[in-house]
Length: 454
Ligand code: GDP
Image: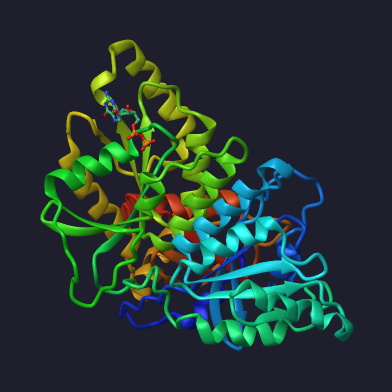
């Protein structure tokens, strides 16, 4: 995390607030072995999306920042789960569903050497019904002699098949040129980045009470906002009025529609979580207080941290909590959630409505922290004070010094320190801790990066 490419794009010295627009999202869908990972690697120009040879093994990352001709976009690789032959249809259907819900455009990859299989045709039917642009990629066209195989894919009714060889790079530049013509400049799925209702992702493992909370909120206070000035709604999102304000709850379709997958259900749940986080500004992670805090809960919080979104923790089913369980719960929170002790916490009951009104102030606090910008002058005065009071220890006869610091961006607050040498991790944690003591940043992750000046 030493490198911070966005620094140059951010305002260095002015205190004006500038927000980067939401990047458009391109989702990649296809059967196992058609070459999705190879294509992602090729587009990224690096080996980041490791090609997975072991069937059944899932990749961790699904979102990648890509760039072509100076346009930046996010790639969502939906294909990390390798099902057995029986599960393929369900798995590729799940990919397509997530892609259609959560992307601006879909790349559908077919193996031109195999031709369309019944699984492919199944997905084609789903893709034809979406209004979002779908680009058909005929992969494994390694040389010109194989072009006719690609051309035969016109029959799928998804328009022109783009013949590429992900492994050799053939045709990929043309494909990407075309991708840029269909991708919007600014994401339509996440487009209200500036102004408009703030976007909330409601997360949590199955049965924690997500749909109950959604129904309760929507039922009591719903406003049917058809066209709020300047916003277009994605049909998978819902606008709900809470505490006198309209909020966009993203990917409510994913909550209302339950996927029935025997295998890979966890994988698709976390894929959906990651993709929904791309659209959201703040996440409410629901935790069921009647059950021990699980690895899955921690994993969901981890995805929020990775995404850099603001975080609110909602402890649900509080109406079912007894004294004994409560003692255990407090201990579990300390042990398993100590690293996010900065997140506002609300104890609610989606069923009885208990303390639901506390959710809004928590969301507002978290978003305010997420938006915070500390002027460069103030930040440097603070750094001078900290380093005077607590200098960096001498390492190998040298003492790394902080020359200058700036907040490179907000959402979440990201600081860069220009130094004469590497700072100890403890020292960086000390600075992070002091920043939190002074500014709070409740509900927002913060990053402190460094750049070593030789
Ligand atoms: P989801 O899978 O996260 O959407 O969870 P649901 O909203 O479907 O809830 C799962 C079950 O928990 C349902 O039977 C709900 O009635 C129940 N439930 C949800 N919230 C609460 C709560 O606050 N208190 C109680 N007692 N039950 C709840």
